[in-house]
Amino acid sequence: GFLESADRKIILKGKDILDAIDYAEVAHVLFAADKLGLFKKLKEKKTFEELHKELKVEKAAFKIFLNGLIAMNIIKKIGEYYENGEAIKELIETNYIWTIKFNSYFRDPLINLYNVVKKGQKEAKEIKEDKEGYMAYAQTMSSWDEITPKILQYVDLKNAKYMLDLGGGIGHFSIAFIEKYPNLKSKIIDTGEIVELGRKDIERYKDKILLEEKDFLKDEIGSNYDFVWASDILHYLNYEEIQHLMSKIYLSLNPNGSVAIHNFILDNDTNPPAAAVFALTIPLLITKKGFVPKKKDLVYILKSAGFKDIEAKNITPGTKLIIGKK
Ligand SMILES: C[S@@+](CC[C@H](N)C(=O)[O-])C[C@H]1O[C@@H](n2cnc3c(N)ncnc32)[C@H](O)[C@@H]1O
Image (cartoon, rainbow, N blue to C red; front, top):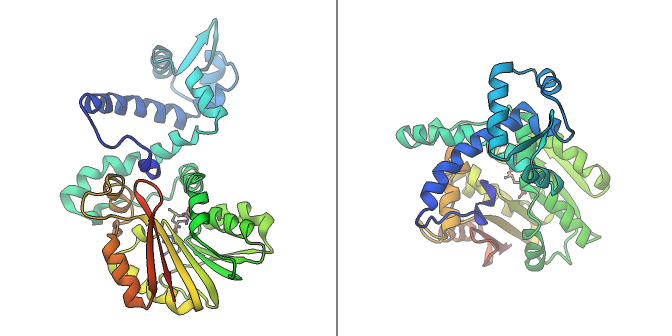
């Protein structure tokens, strides 16, 4: 999916193109089944009559749909009973079933790619109405288990007491930082529905993590921070907004404080490939104004805001960590 584009097969060779076209069809079948709630129901064996009643579907079409799913090995039928196929069972067991919802959530924006390319980024569509999809999206934001240890290795907060987590989502990174550094407290600023989702996740850290519902561009972001963390937020902003935000961050920091940015960042127009591919997904299709910044531009913006000793590290094939000191 989108945010995993770092691990995803994005450089096509030979027959990959034909496979991709075939699988697009399979993906749409999976999205429909998931949206109908079929996989959830088929955790237990069900007869056709039970399923048809519980899912409130049109009988004739549903029958044809189920037969196709059986033929594809997505579900199976033993005697009168339907149940999930092995691959779906495994997705549920390994807790990866949300990847279907997540990719389905981005299906409409992707279909809209044609329009955006034809008429421009203003044609992008925000898609926050779908609560379940947004939950799946929020989950991917914090499914960065391989990323977090690397970040913790490069970000030293021994002497930090108070940090700000901009666009911190459901608090994944704040939690990792305060767990490693017992003297540290964090404030998360985020907007919209994510705040509601995040509240539940950080409830048990309420002495150490404060969640504020604010717009980090328009509202004031507070001060006296030793560290400001900005992960995966830059591609929501245009160039001027990045400049504005970096100056705001600089002013909010204590002397000797530091900022760390983690994002898809380009070295040049087409490299790294994972960043160039990511650029045509969320930034182009959803944000209406965001883009994937180039490293040299970010370094320039950080320097202009007053930061020094700027360092960059590669984190995933498409993302980098950039650290600057006040
Ligand atoms: C892709 S998520 C990243 C979440 C988290 N930082 C992480 O790396 O896992 C981007 C977050 O930025 C938030 N966001 C975007 N623009 C914002 C703004 N102007 N003010 C506050 N939050 C914003 C979104 O609501 C979303 O939760």
